[in-house]
Image (cartoon, rainbow over all chains, first blue to last red; front, side, top):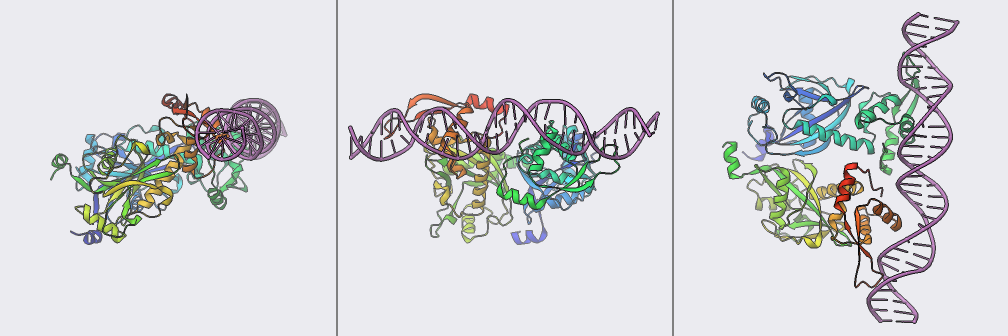
Length: 252
Length: 252
DNA sequence: TAGCTATGTGTCTTTTGAACACTATCAAAT
DNA sequence: ATTTGATAGTGTTCAAAAGACACATAGCTA
């Protein structure tokens, strides 16, 4: 079988997969999107995984990640960034539950698979995962409560977290996790959740405002049982200007 | 054929390769290690590539990178760090010279290959590349003079450079590029070469000395036609201490 | 011994980071 | 109507780090 016929048949490449670590935020804590194999085994985190699957030979890695995420969770239109490749020969066959899962979904469950991991941040309320394909369920799990996952996905999650922490210091990526209109307190809370430490309120507000990437909407929260907060939106234009000039870090 | 027999036969995985971007420094400029396909074509940069080859199904990616580098250039004992995966379906077949090379070295020259790129820094004089396997020659090329390479290796080189620039601000990796005993001026020059900009001499010296990762050897250069410089060595112990406490950046 | 060349050194100014406490505004309860 | 509870919003001071800047020194060579 030559390459051309392979292309037409959109064959899965048995050796390469993509996995997607999708972070969400509900204004209180950080979540990660997981799917469940629906295995016969007792429910446990070892049955859960981040969405991922083999790539087609015709698509590039970024496209594959977008497709796989859509197929497993119905989530679309998000920007994914590569974390890196994970390729230990035993990365997917260590646990019994891993092998059971692979036998259920893979034509060649014994094949050696290296995976390319991606991560992204989304506004949780805008993305209601709906399980499909081999995912028996899909949903958000608090990152702090995840201690184990199928395959090497716990390692992949940790690598995603590290990259998120590194990135948020040099790019205002956090806005993808918030509603369009948000308060400085919400943004503040988000940074604290991601970096897992307290940040001084006044210093935070000063620094973030000095970046000039927020637009004050002159709108207030309504119906809150306390002093209502100003609402802001992310100013993409100014952000792009700032990115080009280059800014080194937010210094948190 | 099952996995076990594959393992015994150490089969090459036709779909996954590793590529190694190795940087060197000769106290004057930054170099990258390239191999030549020795193609029949006229000599050109499109014939050159960074060392790389398919992985075995039995080895992990890091091991594969080390092995491939050794096989192609006889370079051993270096620490490689992953850059990321490159997987465009057309990444290796765009140019005629690419296809000619693949036909010469691959059992399945048409196969779709995703590659995992690595980078490293070495002391140039300690690593005299000797071409072997399918590399017809191997040698150092000044990074500033490389404008084109085989496959997508020019992109991979640029990604390596970016990672190097990012890394050198937060880790004193540069010491791998210098002789064991070096002067502050040499270190200074190295930072200027990597970051491609001038750095104030006095500020540089102050900052780097304040990190306490250099040991003054109380030795001087000899035979130089100017005031001889103090020699320093890298203090790994203090560096490790510093790494654990965590330091954010060198601020250059 | 004069000249060349790169080394080595200190101060001042500006910018940035970190610590810190009180008043204001709304809704809900009384 | 008043009180209470909850979060928003705001400046100053001190310490540390960054950045700009110029001249004497030590060895070699001619």
